[in-house]
Amino acid sequence: MTQTPISYHFFRGGSSRGPFFKRGDLPADQTRLAAILSSVLGSGHALNIDGLGGGNAVTTKVAMLSESADDWADVDYFFAQVNVMEHNVDFKPTCGNLMTAVGPAAIEMGLVEAVDGVTEVKILATNTGARVVAKIQTPGGNVIYDGDTVIDGVPGSAAPVSLDFMSVTGSFTGVLLPTGNATDLIEGVEVSCVDFAMPMVIARAESFGLTGYESREELDANTDFFSRMEAVRLAAAVKMGLGDCRESVTPKFGLLSPARHGGTLSARYFMPWSTHPTMALTGSQCLAACAVLDDTVASGLYSKPLESPHSFVFEHPLGKMEVTLNFETSSTKNAEGYTPVSAGLVRTARKLARGEVFVPTSIWNGK
Image (cartoon, rainbow, N blue to C red; front, side, top):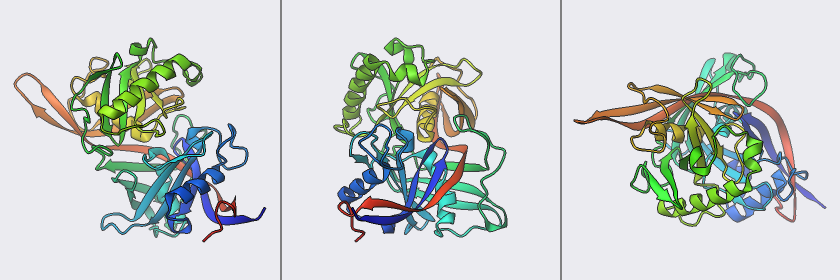
């Protein structure tokens, strides 16, 4: 079997990891591209034993970068979520964790020139249109990866990467509340459908007979819960204007409950057919938006903020994630309302490998 080599870098971004390619090194046709990425990651086996994947949705992600034609952005970030078991790829969502590595990768791949000190990289997430400013530590014009910043779900410490997310309201649907309501009763469950960085269907854990403090393993073993959750997710997707989402990872699903360890809220995030080991960056922003809005499923679970920006701390299965939300306030005669505008987070990234990955020429001959 002859094989086709493809140049790549391999990065951890936040609590996700995957290969990074130059978009121009891969075919434009998405059907052919999906076949290539499925081969690279080793789809079709629970361990992805014949590819670079790690047998989990957070380790079967792909980033494709290119110089941006947008007047504002430095680099375009095209994301692909590769299925672990099925030979299909979802090009609809973006990934905030993997985006942590886009700035360092753009510099390492020669797409952005670093400066001495801190290099600012303006990223256009082409899947959703989100605009993100990443700040990378580059003393002497070189990316450094060692540092003192610790994030739960990742061992050790590393250099900080700050991300400021802008233009994320209505990332898929064009509106913050796609159904027009703060809450809806769908399949007998009260949910909030919110589109902020990522379209999500959000419920209280108690609505499913859960505490919201279950471990990832406990939730993944609860097939009855997943069956019921998927029915709610798919029905909500239609109401959100997203259509038939049986083969799409969007909208994502989240559960909220009161915090137990000093955070703002306890949260569980689903990808959606398995439990996220920690928390997605885009998901954390959407949950924060849900929390600040009036009359959502988050109402009454915590005391609302009075001033912007406000830091939300979400307790997840392996610790906590903090997201800073900027919002506008508007006072009425009876209450004060909040409208989310943008969000910021600090994560870490690390370059793990670079070189060539190979796919059979029967899948792609490189032309």
